[in-house]
Length: 86
Image 1 (cartoon, helix red, strand yellow):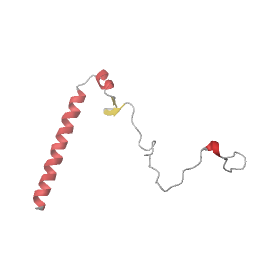
Image 2 (spheres, rainbow, N blue to C red):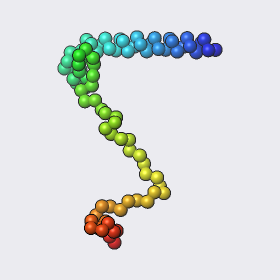
Image 3 (cartoon, rainbow, N blue to C red):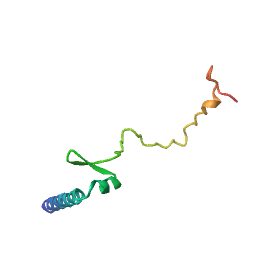
Image 4 (cartoon, rainbow, N blue to C red):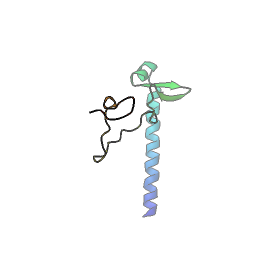
């Protein structure tokens, strides 16, 4: 059982390696204009995105719990004392 699982894992990783290698070779054959159209470019021998999305810059939006009180709008608070306006 463990030998079969290990063999499947090895075969899967080898297959993924050769698939990625073939895709990389196909992208190497593309001219710079075509790469730019799909949002890629060559930089120091590596293929990089033209406009990389930074995951750290955008925090995932968290839904507010239903039982949490809704904060008053900034215009509903007195700028001097901070009291709620009616």
